[in-house]
Image 1 (cartoon, rainbow, N blue to C red):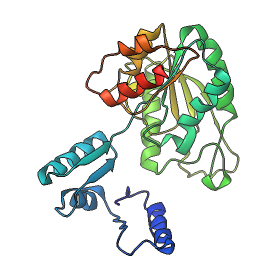
Image 2 (cartoon, rainbow, N blue to C red; image 1 turned 30 degrees about the vertical axis):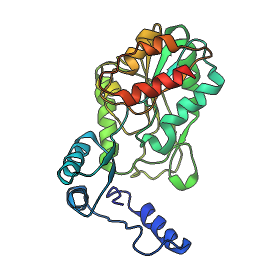
Image 3 (cartoon, rainbow, N blue to C red; image 1 turned 90 degrees about the horizontal axis):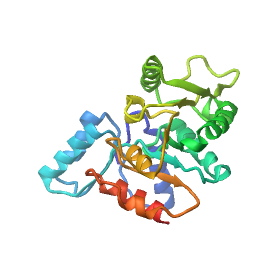
Length: 273
């Protein structure tokens, strides 16, 4: 296992616990280091007979090429821009806690973070008002305090999230709500209180690119066909959630695949059940 260079401590602790639990020495190996050095060496090593990689599409391409040279299977999970789709008949009491948690957990630093919320225009104002209340009630601060949201992994990621949000605001995207930073939080901490954006154009970069931070982009749709088009309208395909009280299989079957069958099959499966 080669962890990200900024997140080595947990895998090292897991390996120590594995030894304590009786796993034979050498069965689990944690290889720390930079991706361009340790990661590249592992991916291209002839002694590796299966590669599973989670990370950026760019690095995933390099890993897949390395696996192809040695003719070994490769499993890739390359980010997401996962939609939470709220129809007018959705049970909001059930849906909204999940919508918020899906972008706040781990400060939004998960591939499957629900970073887009697609809202039926008929309930847009109601949903945004409820989301605003929830976001403004969230607290951000040091991880050991057990708050709703902890810090980002490092300063580089904090600056990246800030830059993406500022670019969106410069293009007229409106900040609908912002969580609070708790009193006494270290001034040099990498904190980015969760942010809710409204009326985000589906083609804007903040709706197309993986932020990897607690930023939720809200947008509206009119009807199932438009919901499917917006949900499928990014380069990513990982997870999706559909909130409705009735079956919607006919429309889901009409969704185009656009080269990402895994995503659409999951979307269609959720719609069907």
